[in-house]
Image: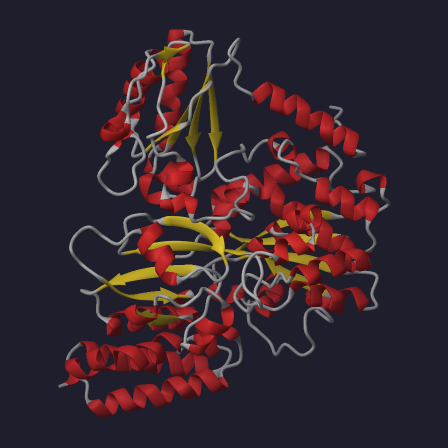
Length: 574
């Protein structure tokens, strides 16, 4: 079979025009588009049955004016399955909590008869008030006209507070179709980097953008690339760290399932910047859909000549493969990840020499996480000044957070760095409607800390959060209501770290286990005030002496809860 080899911008533009023309709603042709959102969250909630129902109804009714599509997750996972219905000359309607029966009703009432099924429409909070906001002003082309009083996506705080860069294609493209990505200016940044920029230009642009690594440490991305570019070696590697394992974190999974080519394109640019010809995406095997989407995307990119030899006729060779991790949390640490790809046990090592000097197979290696790489193409296309205009003085751009816990809207959000914790929790996630108050937010997963209510106005930024004893981390955010025990929260996360410890260094192996034992004793009601003091001392020892990042941060949940909720510990042991 002969495939199209994309050689220049003209060919990218031709694919874009043809794809847009095919997908556009036309009053003379496809007047209605029905999109079923099918990320892992949607599929787990029954989205496949919903899709099959619509497919059967379209076939049975011979409705040639209905276009049925799929995309990845829209980002608000607690409302799944989600279905979007678009009609020419009208604002799209998003339906939530859809099943096969509701899908049939939507098909008969909205798609065929033109009346929005308001009781299933996406609403601001738990209770749908669409009935009050829908007005029938007549019909156009057989469809109900919806007036300006109806809330569109931009009027719903969950979406209106977001600024999407990493998630720019979320809910818009079919992740299994490379043409959809190209139609959204995909691979233009790769073309520019390969044909119009040299390695120095690329690194300068990324450096001046102020992009910091989104995996948790916040190290300047351009500086890391600069180190690797200067390393003298003919073999260099780019690794995408997709070994996302924090409890409550699923940002990377959402990106990979919804927009895999954004990561692939970022890796191509990174490869040119440091002189690497090979890349690996280290993805957890527990993410089967992400792995499937990635492998399909890589295969399609190869067929178009966007991976492999002489990409865009530039003389630059670069290819990628997916490496499935077995599920060890410690393999998210970059030296352990490298060891795993090499075929060894995923144990960390001292970071001197750094991977940028001697990494995979002892060659210079850059390791960036999914979100970092997804930022690269927009920076190359829009320029460093554009990206640097977003965020704070020290931290530029946006950050994706997965929000969960005692909230109404569970899902992924992307906000400018510097947005307050309160904005995300109260305005976007929305506090529960059960009369319970949020008392704390756990940031940064098991490596982070518990931030109490009085600090919710803290900006989501690396340094301000670190000063309070927590971290932004990779982006996990868990809301905790007043009924939850801070001691139980600490025990849960420390036990997780203890279970996931590789066992290589004594402080982490034994220290986390002993912290769990003390926390178990306290929670059982058999603890003493002396146990609290011992726990605190032990937490500091582990933090200061453990080998890798997992061990050094495993104490954070204990130290932060002791700092802000010590009274809860003392009440238990009294």
